[in-house]
Structures are given as structure tokens and as C-alpha cells.
Length: 589
Image 1 (cartoon, rainbow, N blue to C red):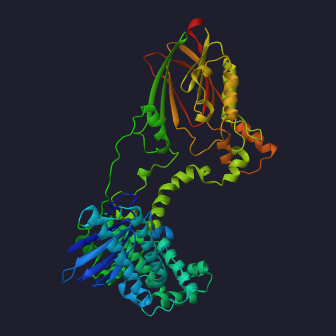
Image 2: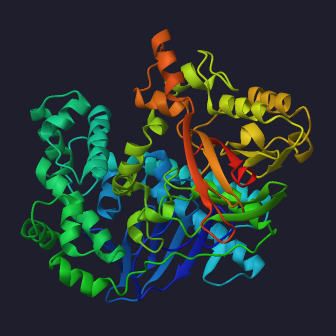
Image 3: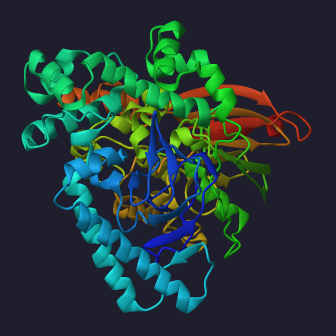
């Protein structure tokens, strides 16, 4: 993949060169190749063209092509148009590369097109004569007036191209008997069919599917494709698949049997038969001959660091992008709080799992031609869909319409919903109130209160919008209850995709025998509502059911814990809350 060689303020680049061989490659931008002297062989996809003096061809962004010298030497001008000035992909336009169609299609304007091209080339040559730039590549970046003049010329040239050379008239073949050139409606239908084929080519496309898409009968679709392109419905589909096969063969190291499956062919024999009809060799032979010479790698520039972040801040910023297999990216913090009853070691380990899919686990190789083109959206979407199946099954709430969420949970921030359903923050506030404020201590993710007989820990895994807004002084002030409640009610709406925390692990280590009473919330009301199928309207019975289901569970147990022994480990899911009370047995012995 060749990168546009100039800064973003350059709208085009011009090269005046003699070409011997330029192997198969593609560009991020649109390219115009014009032969000034001699001849030049151009390979675009499955087609080969021979350009003579005064002839040109258009290369679309991301289109595989190669340039070869024929028997004669050549002098060639290449104009590269920055996609920030004009992007055919964004415009939904595909230009044809077959020169022998150009002059036939635009006989009235052809001389104007060539004159416009020559004016642009002259403009670049005059720029280099003044700036003494590289003799092979001439960017127009001198005077403002010159740049504006080039914009006018380029816009005029592109208007000609859009008028005469778009794909709805001449895509895929040199079909000179095209009957649709003067029928805009039929040409637009053909364009719709072509884009549908390019988007769904790996699938089994039926004639009836396309007929339903264009609101015409099956016979008319078959006739439209044949008369407009020169290929039958089935041949067109296979032609597109073979075009994509070249991308797979040269742009990836994927086994050929897998390529057959990815392209939608029923068997290798059927695939090989069609491939040989267009490329005149087997897929294996084609890969062996051209892959080593294919320019597959993109130019990559590395940005120098502009600032240094605190490790905690950096990991916190990255935590939203980690996924279930990203255990190597974690935040580990250890805080120790000494209290009269014993010693608490609060070890907080944040590991984002199953929240946001990690891009590195979606198979998009950076050095592959396969994933570099908007025209290959079907391939990319297929990969994304396969990687998202498990995620969608486990977290369907991310894919539900916003109306349901906003109607029940999204429009009423705070401890309770507008329907009176208690959120996890409600129980956090209730537990906090039971602790009292006289001996209250706080470290990350934990409140604690101790007396001679017992110690209570309130462990929480709340989103930032509830507790992170509070300062240390506020958390330890006598007005803690009112402060927490105010923060919860004034917090912005809860965004269940990006505000979810990861799993939080907390270890409690005490030096005495204890009895434990544990109250815990593992799933808040939203999770319970999700299990009910996202009802948009709740009756009293359902509200009561949600409140009961999300209420804390109570557990009683006896433990003997020692400083050198195994600590009590608590794992809190997102929005999880646990209130644990320890009674000292040693004082009664």
C-alpha cells in the first residue's frame, strides 16, 4: 500500500517518470496515468491494457494494479489526487480503467479532458521549476493562487470523469454494446446491483434477492445485467469473487482452501476453473509468481511522545479497550490501612473482561491489502461479525434500542429509577449509613468502621459517576451520607457500555479468629431487567420482582484467618456491593 507522499495541505502530487516495472500495488488515493511518449502496459484487476501516446487510465483508491514497460521506452505522467480533496469511495463512485471506452463514451468532451490534464501537468512543472523540488515528484504547494487554480482544474476534470466514466456504464468488461449509456434509470439500477454484489459476494445471492432490491421482476434483472455489462447474472457474481481472490492470494497468507470458503465457492475445482479463465494460471501458480513482488506493506510513521502520564491514569484510560483475553493489561494497586481491630490489605486489580471487544483480537492484519479498502466492507464486516457473536450473546443490552433503556433506566440518574427500582448505589448508601461516621475510614473501593468487638467493610465497584467525583475530605467527612447521596442523584445518566468497570478483586487479611456476616449484591436491577427481556413498561408486580431479585443476599460463616494464611478474597462484578462484618472470637476465649 503506497502512502500519499505529501502533507494534508497538498491536494495532488505529480510524477514525470520512465517506467520499466512497477509491481502489483494499490494506493490510498485516486491516480491518473497519462502516457506522453511510447507505450505502457497497465494491469488493473483481471484486465490488461496497452496505453499509447496521448492515452490515459484512471486507477481507483485501493485498486490493485501494476505498470510494465512494453517493447518501447516510455515517458509517463502520474497524477495522484489526495482523498481529502476527492474520495471516490466516499462519493460512492467507481471509475473504469478501460481507455478504449473513454474516447467512445466522451467523444464530445474528450479533447477538453486531455487539455485539462495537460494544464494540470504544466502547473506542476512550473511549480518545480521555481521551487527546485525533487525532479520526479512535484507537489503544487507554492502560491495560494496557484493552488486555487489547480483546484478549479481538478474539479473540472473530475466533473468530466463523473459524467462519462463511472462504473454504472462500464464496470467489469469492455462491453462496447452497452445499451444503458443513455438510460439513467437503468444505469442507476445496474449500479445498485453491482454494489449489492460487491457487498454480499461471499453469500449465496439469488436472482430473486436482487429483484426484490430493485423492485423489478427476475427476468428484467437478468436482461439488465446481460445488456449492461455483457455477463450473465451468475458469471458476474463469479467474476467479482475472482477479483477478490486476487486480494486474498496476494494480500494474505491464507490457505487457498480457506480462500475458497471465504469467497463463497462450492469447491476448489469450481474456484480454480473460474480463476484460470481470467488469470490463465492456477491460484497456486499466481500466488507463487506475484506475491513476493507485491507491495503489501503500508508506510508507517511513529509519533513522538508529547506527554508522560501517570501509570494509573494511563491504565484507567486504556481499561475501556481491553477484552476477555487481555489479562496482560491490568491495573494493580495495593493500599494498606491499619486499624485497631487488625490489618486490612486492599489489593485492587482491575481487569476489563467481556466489556468492549479488543481490536487486536479482530483479525485485521496491518500489513494486508485485504483490509485496506472500503470496497471490501463485506470482508471486514464478516470478520467483525464472527468476533462479536460471543460478545453479543453475553451482553445483549449493548445492542438494544436506546428507547427501552431510556424509558426505564436512562432518564433518572441516582439511587432509584423513575419506577422506584432500587439501583446498586441505593444499597451502597444504605450500607454506608449503617456503618456510622465516627470511626469511618476509606481507601479505594472500600469503607471500613471498627469497634472492639467487630469490624465492617463496605466493598464496592461503582462507576466513576457516583463516587469518583468525591474528594478525600468529602469521603471522610461527617456529612458522608448526604455527600454520597447527592453525588449519586446529580450524576449523569449511566452509560452501560462505557461506564462499566471491570472485575475488582479485594483481599482482606486479619490476625484473629472471626465469624463473618456477608451481605452482597452481585447483579443490580439493570442486569435483572435485562434477563426479563428489556420490558419497556413495568407493572407493580414486575417492579417488586426486580427489587426483590436485586436485594442483598445474606451469608453467615466461620473462618480462622492468620496473617500468614490465605486471605479472604472478594471478587466484585461491575456495580457489585458487599458489606462484610467480622466478629472477634478471641475476646470470648
